[in-house]
Image (cartoon, rainbow, N blue to C red):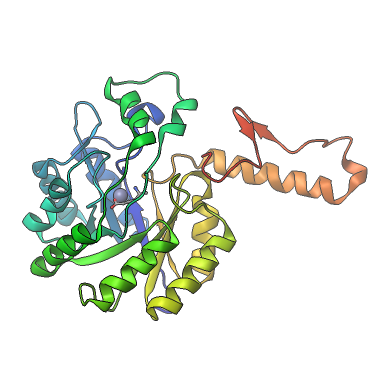
Length: 304
Ligand code: KMH
Ligand code: ZN
């Protein structure tokens, strides 16, 4: 792996809703086309969720997954990583079913339960395209994304039977402990591939210190592993950059972050502000750090 990094493209996910971006891939064809484009741009793994083509709602429909997997495999050499996180409110059986049926080479294994919250995004959007969107966000204030020890063990058994490699998603430090426990019981074996997921409300927030801590904690608990990093919203690029600097890999894509221009704008403004801050003589011409609608620049990591 020296000098190389794995880029995972998380094409559409199960978190964002169509009102949040006209660019969110919805139909199987859009998901396939974007996967192929990502592969041509250097992605080695496509992380796949599917959506109802009519409404854009995350769907557990295995016929959609089958279509997407087959068409990606037909058109490019990317590894297809099927999500077993699915969408908010899907049952554990709905989530693991694609692994049972399609034996993908890689699939996600979420390493613990969290209150996977997106309800705070309601503050940002006034209009929705489809009926389900508002309720889908609202319900997450009281939603536990269930990944108990029993379901993790059952997932891993299916993975084993089908020859599927688990990509272990850790949203917080305790989940690294869960992985170590499952390892000690022989349910998961090295080589391990961890995905550190930062910035989900309900999990650990995005910060350089937190990522250093997670990697260090994981090394102490489980020894050697390969890792990748993804982060919600505008922290995606800084956290992925840090991952590369620390010898890790990256996950990008619209599942985690909808913005590229906004991110670039913020960075440019930040460095402009830092420059003026560094030379007080310039304060008069550049008096304030930039703000954006709905909050200060130095806002909480989850305010994405
Ligand atoms: N939606 C991400 C925050 C999965 O698909 O299994 C986490 C994820 C989990 O990608
Ligand atoms: Zn996902």
